[in-house]
Length: 116
Image (cartoon, rainbow, N blue to C red; front, side, top):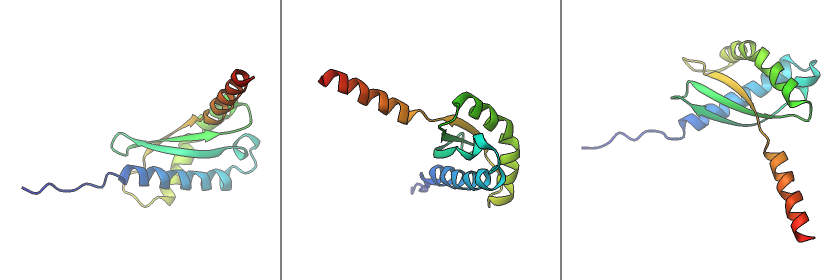
């Protein structure tokens, strides 16, 4: 019996495509909004059989205010995504703050203290 080989990268490809398209939407449709203008999408993960995409963002602005604004515009962004994506179903999207740079900075600070 031959097993059908599945494409394990499909979720990653969809997440990457959604990240690119949402970044374009934010740049084009929200370029006048100072909070959104400073947002960088730094990663994406697909979950739930590709029905859900988590978009990781970074911003130098107040992260709570930026998160609130992104939550407010999520439905509008998803509607714009539906116009651009070439798929039968449009995944739900959720914006999540990525604190990797802050954690890396903190680790570097601690390592510097140890070496002194």
